[in-house]
Length: 290
Length: 341
Image (cartoon, rainbow over all chains, first blue to last red):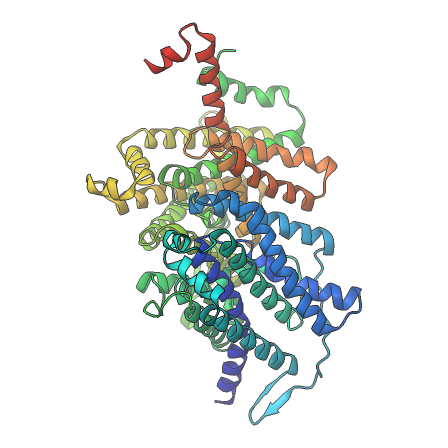
């Protein structure tokens, strides 16, 4: 039982960061109908930014986190403006190919810049874990979870309560009508992509200090993000949040009780099972985007 | 310049080992041929039915592992202390088993995943490849996991009158790969020019319309998936017995991406496109190797992919065909008028 609680706690904490990744991807897919293969690169970009600022520039850990998210959003806006805007209206396969090209170029640029050696990020939290009854959890993980929940809540408010969020939801529901109502579709697309990229960078920046940082770390992260998006239903904000938490828990349970070698297979098995039995996602009835 | 007839191309390709004595060049050509087979098989799905299968390397790897395991033999610890022993079998049997097992997985994945389309299909195929990779990594009893399958025997043929012929050298391997290339090309050509091929293209262009005139969508998509997977498995088998070592890295996503780049650059939905793409991207790394590190090469690949989509979305082969047509039209006095008539 104690072991079960420990796995559950680990899973929920990991799931918080997964949810961040999934939300970013599901917004981009829902609003722009782009399968974003650069998502994992934004994730590793966030982690490398924190590493760079902390290790190379001896900067403050929290400033580094903030910078990583902000630069991730700027990079995302750049990708949208240069690669996706000219291809607006082409088929989903066309943009997918371009995103694959961008992903390969970005990943190898990272490899060139930072080499393939895995790096650890130093963080200011105490090493000794917090022990509550039968379970224990490290302080950095508590911080990561809190920050993830805060970002998710802020994103939720942005989408539900602001004019920008209303415009995003309108674009998701019907692009033409939204444009007729005076929504600047180009701007919405850029903002959405930048926002989703910022969330991916945030997930990388937060999980980087928990694990290690290496150039291909984004591949598995991106595939997991796809799993979360499918689990929650494409374009479904709440679905992605719950999907992230579910994936985190399933992975921890799978690693704990079945085999740690197949830990990363859990997400893919979820994808295959969900698509077989409920292709619209588990939470299809909830309203999409918001 | 007149176009060469098909037999002249075959004769040219067959003559290469006679005047290319450099073993390293032959090695590059053999690799290129293996990738050409794989790219042709991907093109059947991506180009003709319009389904972007991003897990294609799984079929390649399954073919390689099956062929290697059948020819090496293996034993499995079953429950209750019983051990299943599989004796080594001849290489040609392993190769055929690789083709068959890959085709079987193609059938399974086709059956399962063609309930969904577009982005969903892409993600199912990617997930399938990742699961297969993790199985190859973790089922150490069967696959040796990261220790890899070593000492895979080369292809052996017993010819009447010539005795046993073992393909240790580059030259026989080159001819073997060339033969499989030509066979795959012929099979795909025969298929896409048949009724099934017209059904594939109808599905790609307008699935709802095709279905309304009586094309059995799932049946034809599954057929395409089975043949595509089987040919990819053949490419994997060639790889295993040529390189003689197979490890889970064979399932890296990047190899699928290389196949996609080859098909898209050469021209998807054309017979020659994947071959042209495979030749370009089989030989390009060898040229770039002199001047650029592998990372830089990959960055260049990424940019090429983006540039192709922006400036040559149809690929090289269709672009060359329409260029030739335009030149022929302007050269003849009837010109465009003749074209229109």
